[in-house]
Image 1 (cartoon, each protein chain N blue to C red):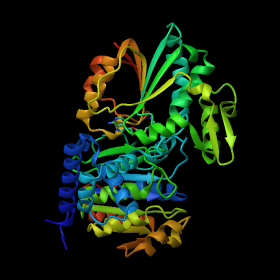
Image 2 (image 1 turned 90 degrees about the horizontal axis):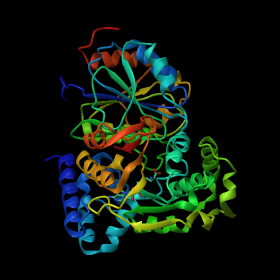
Image 3 (image 1 turned 120 degrees about the vertical axis):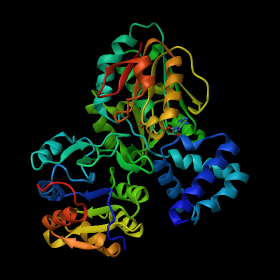
Image 4 (image 1 turned 60 degrees about the vertical axis):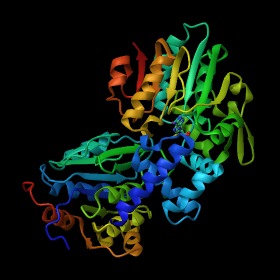
Length: 198
Length: 273
Ligand SMILES: C[S@@+](CC[C@H](N)C(=O)[O-])C[C@H]1O[C@@H](n2cnc3c(N)ncnc32)[C@H](O)[C@@H]1O
């Protein structure tokens, strides 16, 4: 194994109950967290991200913003998928990409779409995290991350408001870590050293 | 060479085969999206490897046709981004209404839901009878669906909600006939629409449009194809004509800055300088 592997991105998926989990996560990460964090949360298609961004920005020092088409992916930022668009990572150029393809697992944005494209783009330099949620979206994508040699983390279903999603991810294949959210944050800091402590 | 690199080679050979055989250059498309569509197609057709698809792609035009269809299938809706339609009513319609006859190019109309939505707005604003709408796509199969204007009933609830949020003045059901599991758009809405095949990769510009609608199409293109298409749009617009793009389109393009001024940055509506 690459002991000194430098991770290039963290991708996170979740739906119901995931907002609280992300909030906890953000409050533990420093503003200079050395790796970009890219998230898909299932939201209503007509909902706006602004309130989410405000909520999360108030909870930590990481810069939280809505993902825009062709945005360069940068460390120290957390990107949220806009409602009603899929969010992908463009391989090679490492920019964010949006599209309006059909829903996947009845969701757009879909976690599988983000995870699979990120796995393609980053290979083993990717960490995938599955948080609370009540669907099966993301389970296949997390497996793809694992297949490409990345690290996979699932929120301990016992601690998740909606355990279906973490459980589905665990059923779909082997995952590397099953942890409560605060410990996921600690693990991230360990795997991605460099930023100052929150 | 690892599997991922090998797959990259396969994709490049496939794209090259399609380009040389049919003249469509998908190296100008967003890679991440293209790859997803490709994988979707392989799964659908039970094909194991990308390279297994290449012989059929080269020798059987029907394979290419279904592939093309798969690249653009049902990814549209009526009144997507309702807010944008409101802004069009407020900011574009007043200018359009000053023209005795109005030419509109709806590029990348897919199966037509969006062009019917636009027609409804124009009817309600009293402009429709003065309009000529050219609705184009590079996919004949979706154009046929657009021309028929028959859509699954299961989506009507969503469209009705969209229509109301888009500033609809009547009831959406005034514009279609229900037939069990399908609705048929009123033929009156189609009266001023011409459906035609047009490929944004390379086909010529249209003349003297007052409005070009092209939403969620450029989002699939790379920067250089986007620039080319913007050039075609600039050439196809009458002076002070409008360009209406998708809500999440990236607009940091020199072609856009040089040729257009921004009318609504949020809803991505521009006016030719
Ligand atoms: C996502 S749909 C957008 C439909 C509609 N405008 C909307 O926003 O709901 C994209 C459409 O662009 C068409 N398209 C893609 N590449 C094209 C090209 N090179 N020339 C013409 N149409 C193209 C596809 O066939 C598809 O119907």
